[in-house]
Length: 197
Image (tube, rainbow, N blue to C red; front, side, top):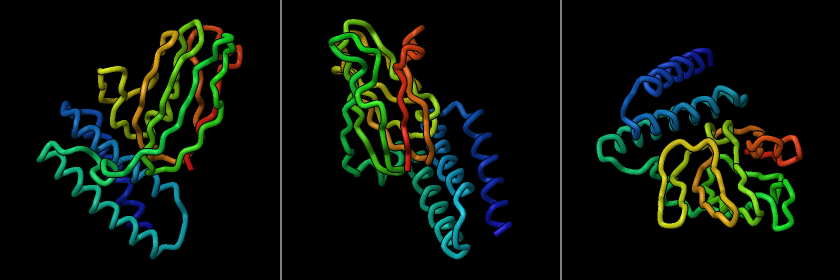
């Protein structure tokens, strides 16, 4: 068990170094995905045989996906690309101008693909800010009208009447804070909770 944990920690350190210094965006995304999987196994406790088997299987498959994707410019992770996303609708405020998220509590399953449909029916702009959740998730894309944005996302700004679609896969278990980062909105109760199981 110590060997497996030690190997995982060494691999995690190495992947963090690649993520920090690589200039290739796709390689950084693949390494970030591997890093999240390895972090998950460091946190889990369980049967040693199951842990060893899952660890090696996941490492080999993930490394193969990362290398294949790097060589052939394919999407990452490939298994998730074929998965049909679950749709979740979230409103930032309402027509009455309430400073709330509807719903305030969001639940996700780690490894499952989701389409988060955001809309702002209120008369003022709002932000969907969940930095830690975004860091612990793999973002496939953010779609706004006919514009598709790819890359790391930390918050989305929605103007009155605005809509956005965020396709993502949560990778790390935990409870994350959601809030609107406009001055006074968070303090007025425009907060929420995101749970990844």
